[in-house]
Image 1: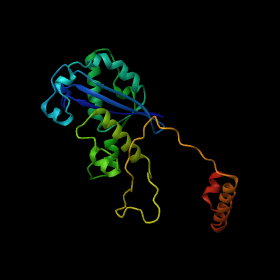
Image 2: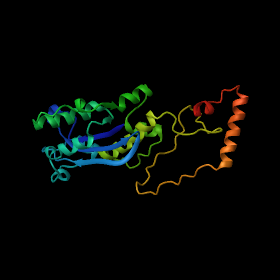
Image 3: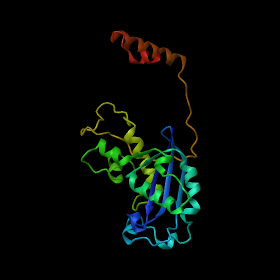
Image 4: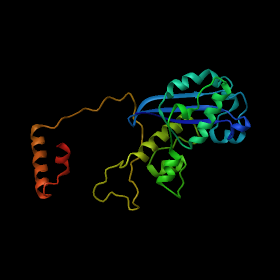
Length: 238
């Protein structure tokens, strides 16, 4: 299963007022694992960035002056997302802007929703946490995701953070609770998420010895007898 976590930054809030995309950030997940592949592009919007938008993302007109226009990057963007399932926080906003950009090309591109299925993580968060704040910063705090670098919004950074939040939000138990370590509030006691370098060496795989396997089998047999034949681990092996 291939998913792409996606975020955009724009010159303003409304396509009806001529606002355009200025940054796209995408992170790839395959079978719910980060692959290390990403797509990131700044875009010349051929118009000025609103002052209010600049305060949010800090991307200036001068910074975008030498960047390619959307028409030049459209195909490589489509090649990256392919027909993946897109994970987007407040999807109607980003999808509306992406579809608007393709309409301006007048090349007959289908809408993104015809090309890809969409998961709106904001809708998902509101379902799981009704009545609470569910913006990305609030979700980072709730799930223990490190967003200390997020002084300003940025499409790639926000996509990376959202990928961590989405995996935690949809992955059930994310930390093993032992003894008295459970959160008194009933929430998840999740350790802070920090990314590992893709260049790290693979972890060694150490198989159990014959003695360890025998001890394991003996313990399962004891559990099975004491539970009246209801040892779930033996049933799973069968």
